[in-house]
Image (cartoon, rainbow, N blue to C red; front, side, top):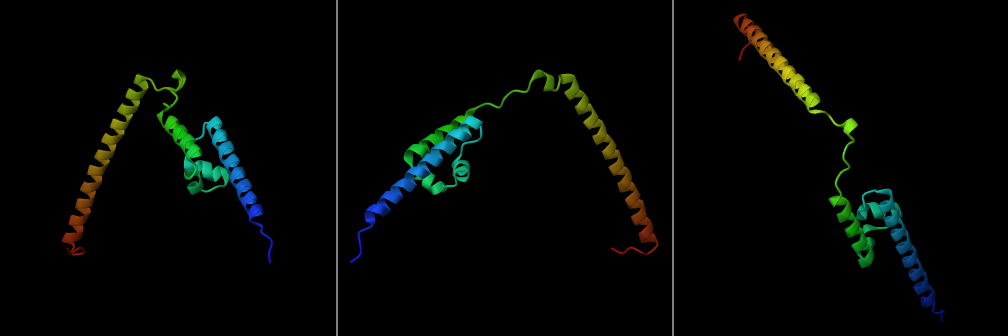
Length: 130
């Protein structure tokens, strides 16, 4: 008759569960501290555990959802005044873009005219049939 090893199996499973919880919580805190996005995928990948396991832990799932929602609502940091474009700079860039657009439109019209002339010449020479 075999010995009953179920107590050892139960203890090993309990220990594995606790180690996995510790890894998940540690990773969750590290991601939050680093300012990284806290998502189920990020926590699972960084901790080396499955997302489905994270979803099955109500307390950890709640923490991830709260941190994820908090990071989504946080406004993006404003640029320092020295890095912001002035109204004059934006206006100048807009004028340059409009000027370049006009140049390209003129070039496009010229190329279309040239193409029409070449196609006309080829038709009259009988080299082009439609």
